[in-house]
Length: 239
Image 1 (cartoon, helix red, strand yellow):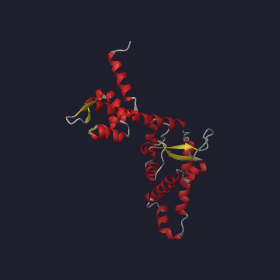
Image 2 (tube, one colour):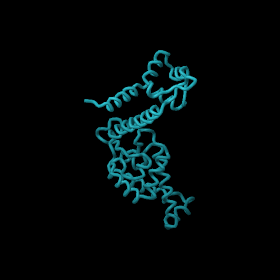
Image 3 (cartoon, one colour):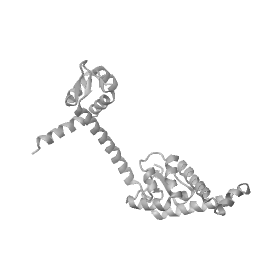
Image 4 (cartoon, one colour):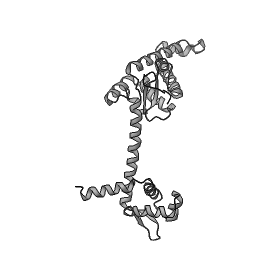
């Protein structure tokens, strides 16, 4: 048998289940108070429909001395609940997306990294003589940070542009954001900073996370992961 408390919870959830009622509460939370006409115009609904939903929301609302609507304390709490549920819904949606991503394994990521490292060495050390002082400095181990910086720029520019360095393209893997949105240069810069300048720390902390999406810590920090474009069940790698 359902207790009185549980009945109250069910009633509250039932009231908040209608999207228009949630809109009313969120609007009043933003404006602090509003007249019936302002609510009607803002929500673009007729008088009868608004009156019906306002009656359902009576426990959450109160009237000012001039007749405007505003949130009671319980209405403010309802807004917090709505915001939390919205956040949970987005997170759940992203979790569903992430569960469908065929993650690239550690071996493929290492191979892609080694290819990129080789390309970077070949490019830096094979630059024409006009840049000889720079290449000479790197070869003499005077300014290894310069090489690391150029390597970081190379990784960031290519991943920020297409999600793939030359090594990743050869291996058939791609960097993506875990929320499914477009990967920008700032995400690529953050994730590759750890790879280039703090690799041991990046890998150790990534292992401690215990999340297959984040082999490296800076991937979690940037909100990125690496997927396998040649996975047998991936029908549309560009989606």
